[in-house]
Length: 420
Image (tube, rainbow, N blue to C red):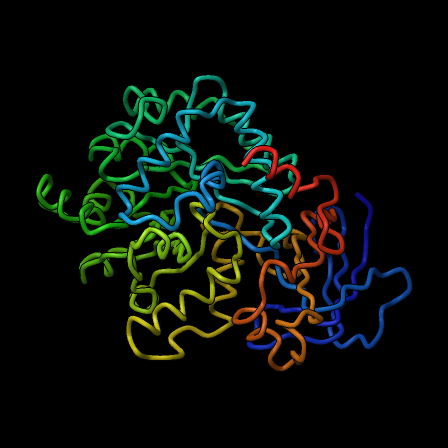
C-alpha cells in the first residue's frame, strides 16, 4: 500500500479537545506523521470534514445475536427467559448461515465506525464455525480478536467442549494473521469449573483473556453457594486476573471484587444489552477509582452504536447515583478506542499518533445531532450526541472501507434483510 495523506477538519489526538487542521500521513498500514494547525488541505491530501477519531473498538460481541433484534425486546421476563430464545437461534446456525449473518453484522459495525471487534465465540460445530466468523470479519474489512470460549457445563451441546484439554486442542489450531488475533474466553463460572478455568488462563498466557462476570445476581448467589467465593474471587484464584484479563459486565460486584479487578484488569461494559436484559448498572466510576480500565461492547447487538455504549456509562450511572460528571467525554472516548483495542490485543491501535495503525473514523458535523459543534466542544458533542449514522468515512490500516456513509464492498442493509 502506497503512502497517503489526509487533512482532517478536526481530529481527536487523545487530549481534552479536538485539534483543528490535522494532517495525517499514512505509510502502508501505519501512521507516519501527524501535523496540527494546517489551515487548508495540502496538494494531494484527502479531505475529511468533521471530527476524525481513532477507529472504535467493540470489545464484546456475539455476532449471531443480531438475528434476535426486534424479536425479543418487548416481552416480559428476565435474562433467563431471553436466554432460551438465544439457545433456539444458536441451534439453527451452520457455517454458511453464520458467515452471512456475521458478515452483515460486522458490516453494520464498520458503518458505525468500528474497526476492530472482539468476538466472544461459543457457537462451535458442527462444521468449522471458527473459520466462518473469521472470514466474516475479513470480508467486512474490520480487524478481529477471536475470543474462543471454553464452555463445559450447561447451555446446549454445540456450545460445549468435552473438557478444557479438548478446548485447548481446538484453539491451538487457530493462528494470528494480519487482521486477526486469537485470544481466549472463560464463558462464565457457571459454564467452566475452577480447575478448567486455570487451564484456560494458562493457555492464554499473554493473549487476551475475557470472561462474563457477575452479570446477574443469581450468578453470584449460585457461585457463593457452590464455591464459597464470588465469580471474581474464583477467577482470581484460578490465575485468570492478569493484566490481559477483561471482565465483561461486572454489574454486581463486592468491595473485594472491585479491589481485585482494580489490580490491572479491564472491564467491558455493554450498556445497551445490560438495559435490554435488565441486568443492572455496573459501578463504572468505582471500577476506575480502583484502578480498572474500561472498554465497551455491543454484546447482543440490540444496538450497534459505540457512541451510545460509551455515553451510557456516564448517563446510566447518573440515574443510579444522582451525580453528574463521573466520566468525562475524553475518558469515555478512550474506553471506546485505545483501552478497548488494548483489551483485544491491539495496543498499537486506537490512537492517532506516529507508529499507530491507521484505523480512523470520521464523524460528520452536518447532521441535526452534530450541527453547531465547535472545535472546543466537538469531543463532547461526539460522545454525548453523535450516533452511528453520523459516521461518514472509515479506514482500517489505511484502507477505506466506508466512504460517504456507504460500505465499500457490501450492501449491508440488503445482507441483513436477507439473513437476519
